[in-house]
Length: 177
Image 1: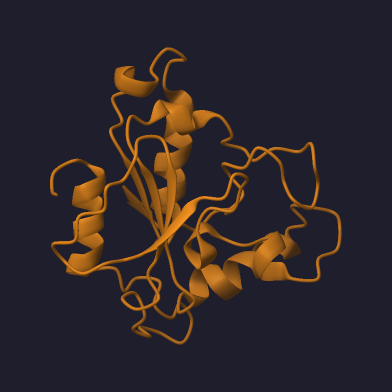
Image 2: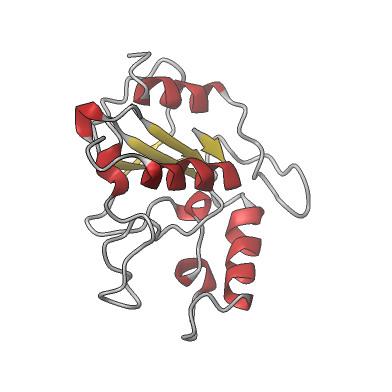
């Protein structure tokens, strides 16, 4: 589990696992990205604006022996406004974009973006049983929960201390439900 750039850290650490550490042989039993501050295309097999080009983490899904979750909310300015702006200014991609939040968007703004599409589910009340499937991507719509404006700069980016978030994490880890 990781928040913000910590979500990026735990995601990229999957690439460091041995090639045979997949499925049941993986020591990673779930992955939860809370308001991830890195590209929402990181796990994509094809980038929609550049077919044939892949996300940096394509193929590491099988190194998780459980579900892969990502919370997202429009109230998070850090990943909804500032991350795409900084990515575009860095010229991580040299083609123009009509929608910065899509082209250079972050995981915490709209969840996983890839084909096949991830399963989008609302972040549910405490006690909810999710029935997450192993090695499937789930974008957790957190708009109703992660929404408190904590600063003019970051919005709700760090408004993550909610029992609903913990419930999803525990379900993904197989510790509840």
